[in-house]
Image 1 (cartoon, rainbow, N blue to C red):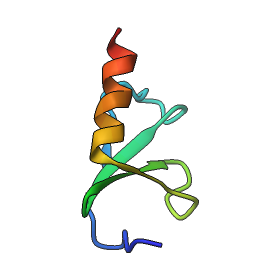
Image 2 (cartoon, rainbow, N blue to C red):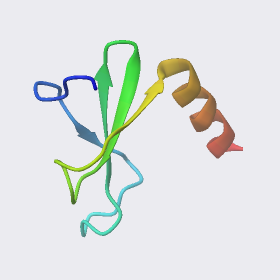
Image 3 (cartoon, one colour):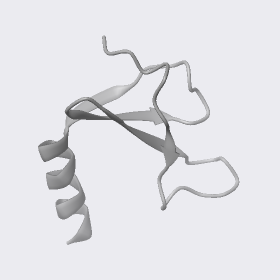
Image 4 (cartoon, one colour):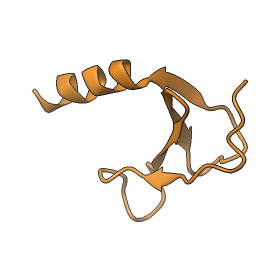
Length: 61
């Protein structure tokens, strides 16, 4: 597992302000880490930057 203790997490721009649907992202080495801001100590998803860029591209269509 990658160390995410000292990374800077950023809330996704599409997340709601009331905390209901918040996703946070952090750059970690050659990946992007994704977590649920309501459970910061919970599981994290790690995807390559290329795969994350492809996901964003698909979502914009």
